[in-house]
Amino acid sequence: MNMRSLLISTLVICTLGASAWWVSQRITVSHEDQRKPPEKDIRLNPMSALEQLLSHFEVDVQSNNNRNLLHNLPATNQAIVVRNLKQPLTHERELALLNWVEQGGKLIYEPYWLGKSDERQYFHEKMGVLIQEIEDWQDIQRPNHAWSELNNEDLYFHMSPQYVLSLQADSPSAKRSKIIIASDVGAHGIQVNHGQGSVLFLSDSDFLSTPKVWQAYYKNDTHGYSTDLSRHDHAYFMWLQLKDSQKVWLLYESSSPAFLSIVYKHFPALVLFSAIWLLLFLLYLLKRFGPVVTQLPGEQRNLKQHIQQVGYFHWQQDKGNYLLNSWRTRIQHKIFVKHPNLAGLQDPALYDMLASLSGFSPADIQQAWSQPCHNQTEFITYTKRLKKLWTM
Image (cartoon, rainbow, N blue to C red; front, side, top):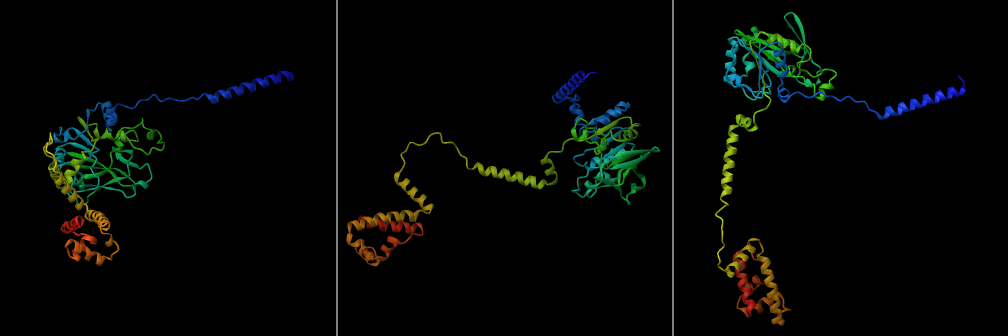
């Protein structure tokens, strides 16, 4: 190959390389995610994945977003899974649930605990199980690995380290209880055998949640800190617990009770007092309203009454002395113009001259001439004296 051909080949290769680089800078290859989030009823059901799992294995299952089932409990050969309670069960519901378990029912239950605000025993305490929050649980290394040995199999979990369970040593059910799920933090699952049935208490039921794969934080969770039914052996554990039940009921609550109902439950006296006060306040405002005057009377206004009311208004606004001083200035100007010999006199001599002209005493003239009034009576008295000086 001669030199000419080599140069041409080099030039062509450089041109093609530059063209490829230029095109690569202006073309962006992106992957568009065509996945759609699940339906609303699935997204709002925190146990929809568990429901689908059991249905896949031909287990009859049904989800309820309320606690109505607890008012009419099912047959004792069925199972109930309860989580996300926004308020504790009533004492009557707890007793009915205990009786149902004693007759052979199977219950998986996340205890309600938001810091006890009353002295009564909650359902888990009646069964000898306590729940408590770990101090500084945010500092515990994540994920919090837990384990269980079931049917001679080692199962692994991701459990929240916030809450742990414990057994009351003096409880009658302590001998019928065993720890099912544990971690380095403490116990997360305790099974209590009661009569012919059993209750599995869970410190936290987030490991039963539906995976939120359509949310960004789930996609970015490369370390697997979050927990749901898809992690580790969560799904297998729940299938082992529920596979022998004739039917499984999944109960959850997705909304809290109304604020006023919670306030009334804990502070009924405050709510009643506020309602009564509001009613009385509205009644107080009602007395300001009267019949509407459709047509004003055609009588002419009394000018004298109007002047009296204006004077009374000014007096109420502490303008009595202002009016009195204005009138004094006009009277003094008129007297000094009419009697110029009085203009240069000192006050005592002036008061004596005005007293001789008006018939008042010098003390009365001094009060009306210069002293302020302190009440409505003095204002009227000084005004009468100044009126006499105006006309003399």
